[in-house]
Each structure stands twice: as structure tokens, then as C-alpha cells.
Length: 630
Image (cartoon, rainbow, N blue to C red; front, side, top):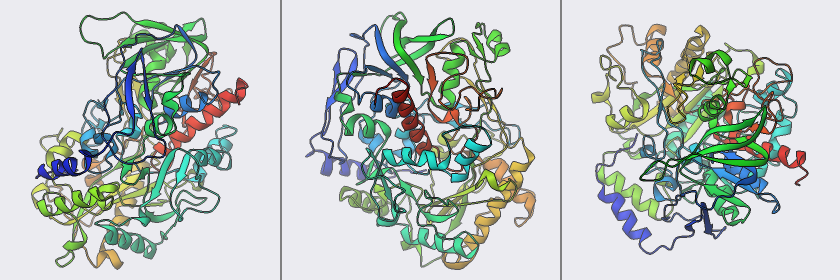
């Protein structure tokens, strides 16, 4: 994580760039909804006023109510209101995201976690990962987690979607059938994408770091070249028909500005100004209102108001309610509504309307931080986060629209298989590559929870070199599954999150294979030429070259990659494990759909923001067809 030892550098950026800039959106408080004038072609980074809502002026009913303005919710609301005859209420618990802290992709990104824009969830202690509590950031702002993530654009392995379709009976969700919805969102700004597989006319800016110039680019290119030596070839487009390979990252960034879904689907395209769209911030949905087994609205609570408590408000939905709260928020909302495991709902004092396995099948991805120094004579290729000179250079280049400050922390990635899972499951291993080392222990403590076993802190903090790399072996098709459960019937109480990391013994076997691969890549070829030996944790009582050392290192250091999924699983009709059908309709309830990562039968092989956006696109398309709104 990134630390500014010289805050003057950031102040310098604000003074030189922002003082003369005029805001490109005017966001106002307008009788209960967020609205704004826009310039859809302007992608420059400029400060924005904040927006909130009192809820005054809300109508009693809307055609569609979308719960959660995150990666999928903004897409659903934007697409539905393309038809001017359709009224939509989009509800977000957080506030606006149109500010420098969100839109800057590098400088402020680590500080978004544990801020007011983060739900800052925590798991229960994980017995097989050193009894640590994992920190789970989830976006609490317009754009949801797309406003606080690291902006990596990864569709997943095509085999994932074919498996959804063939093995799990999710008709309409094969790779060939979902590609058009990925393309529909994209404004792909690189020539490196495979012809015919990327969109150019969508609102979501996507770029390739191949096309940029930044500190660490040569190091990242050496990583890609060395992966090829070990059987993972350079892949010019891992979002094409074959994911296997290594590449510089594709990111949801343009001209040094994060492109979250609120910026893309609400502000940039002018949807925020549509009279048929109401965007309500600072409100939580206490429950979906059910009349029998028909969803006919939602019950709202204003959590942004100061002073006396305000009564909850019922807003009716004339057509449907679409829950887009993510893999944590969606099961919480469904269970609070009486939709979930009957026995558990009774435990917390709730009546069960429909008994479904909501909150089961929780899946996530894991990564671990491994460090290598740059050899003497190669430091100029890297970046040191406590060097005033390096920081000043970064900020100066950023002000000119170039350099590392315009991109993601993760500059390169690779995807391959461990051999532990069957071929149809797709790639189960990913490497995230960062051409620098974060030296701020407090940031790592706050963001990852690595401090929560005080008897075993990260032993090598004092040994970290100034210039080096962080290579992150990542397990992206774990066989371990966990649960989301309610702590109580209080809608503001954080849910109980238990991912049960590494509870399936095959996961650690696969994960160690990824660690082995990182060692091969970092000690040989073009990358090995410029790196010194791995920084070893001497507190681990095993030889550093042993399987036992690698396994223990992974257990002690593994943390979430922020990709929870699967808690409202999609499946064929009659599948007792499924919460929703292939049309994303909640089983046993009329007028209710789910659109977010929670519907994934299995989590995809890679970062989940792009698939969540695709799910939003496909959901909106299915709703339009069902209600003849095209």
C-alpha cells in the first residue's frame, strides 16, 4: 500500500491542476434525487461537489426499483431508463462518488478502504489462515465497489461461462452468449484487443497499460517475457477466447481517471439528468416488501439524516424490484425480507416466506504478498513510496496526464491452471504483479487485517528493500465455500461472513503451485536478471525451499482479493442449490430479480467487476424483453 511521506506533493497537484479547472458536472440536491448537468465527452479529472438526499419529494411508486447503485445496479438503472416511459428508483446507502479521491486511480486508491465509502466488513476468524480476521471492503457509494477497487478489467475464463450453461443449466449464459453484453458496455481504447471482441461505443472506458508509459513498465514487460519461458505465453488479450497467458493489465481508466459504473452509466452518458430516473443516496433498504410471495416494493430508511430518527418509508414497485447489493449485501437484503434458510431466519426472529439457500455457496479469491528486491543498478526502473523525489516525479507526471499515477497499482497479470481442478473449470491460478513495494505497515494493517494475530506479525517488514517488486500468487477457483448469515434482524447490523478459507484441502495444493510458479519467474529469465533473492520470513520453522514453508507462508499471509460471489446462486429449474433462475428471477417469488456477483454459480477465474457489469447489462436486456420495453 501507498504512503505519502511528503503530503506537499499532493497539495502541489491540487494547486497546479485543480484551481483552474471548472467542474464538468453540477450535482444538485433536487427534491429527493441526485441530478446534474453533464458534458459526456469530458473525461478529465476534476473536483466534484458532494451529493446527498433527504428523500423529500419521492413518489409513492416507480415502475422498477433497483437496490444498490454499484457495479451492476448503475447499469440496470441506466439501461432501463433509456425508455422514457419507464420510471426507475435507484437506491444507494452511500453518497456521491464524484470527487478526486475516487477518480484518481493511484494516488488515493488505498485510502478508500475503511473510509466513509466502504462498508468495511470483517469476517469471522479463519481457523486455517492463522485464525486471522479478513478485512472485506465493499463499496458504499455511487458506483459501489467499482469506485474503490483497483480497476482491473478481467472478463474471466470463457470456460467459466460455458460451465454455467452446460453443467449448471444456466441457458443463455455461455461465453458466446455473454460476449455481446461485455462489448455493449465497453469503450475500449486500445488496438491490442482481439478484433470483434471489444466494444467501442459503450460508456465504460477500458484501456491497456501496454499503451502507457510509467515507472515499472520495463519490469512488468520482463515479468511477461519470463512467464513465457515457463509455459505461460504472452497473451495480447486475456479477455479474448483464450485467457491463458501473461500480459500487462487492462484497466477501467482513461486519461488518468477511474471509470466506475456511476461515472460511466449515470454521469458520462447523461442518465443522471433523465426525468424518469431518481437516484436516492444515503438510504438503506430494510427489506423487500412482499405481499404473499409477490415483491411489490421496498422499505427504506434514511441513514444520512441528522437529528431525530425518521420513520421507515414504503415505496411501491409497479413492475419489479431488482436487488443489486453484491455478494454480501444481496443475501442480507433477501434474508431480511424473509427469503432464505428457514431455520436461520427463525434463529434471528424472522418469518420465512420462501425457504431458499440464500447466503450459501460463498466463494472468494485469495492472494498473498511476496517481495523481491531490485538488484543494484536497476533501481531506476522502479518506484520507492517513501522517496520525496520519486513522489514528486509521480505527481508532476500525473499532472501532465502520464506516468504511474495515471494507472492501477497492478501493472501485469498472468493466468494458468494448477492441474488440481478439471479442465472445464478453467484457470484456477492468477498472478497480480506490482513493480513496487508498499512500505506503510499501518496501511497493510488497516486494509488487509494482517495485524490481527499480534503474536505473528509480518516478520520481514524491517527487511523490505526500498526498490523492488510485489508479486501476488492468487487462488481464483477455490473449492472451499462459506456462508453469509444475519447477525440479527436489524438491517444496519453487519452480517456474519465466514468464507471458510482453505477448508478444502485441494485449495492449498493448488495455491502452493502458484507460489512455485512465482519463484520460477522471479529467479530466471529477463525478470530474474534484475531481481535479488526473495525476502524470506525467518519465523517460519521450515527450510525456505520446502513445500511446508510455502504452505505456511500462504496460510499466514493470504487475504481476500475482494471478489466474493455465489451467495444467490443461479441454476436450472429444480436445482435445490439455486436461488435464482437463468432469468435472474428469485425462485418462488414474483416481481423480484437479483443482478450482481451473488448469482454466479461458481466465481469466475479473475477479477469480478467486469462480469458484474455484464450481469447488469444482461439483466436489463432480459427485463426489457419481458416487459416489451425495447
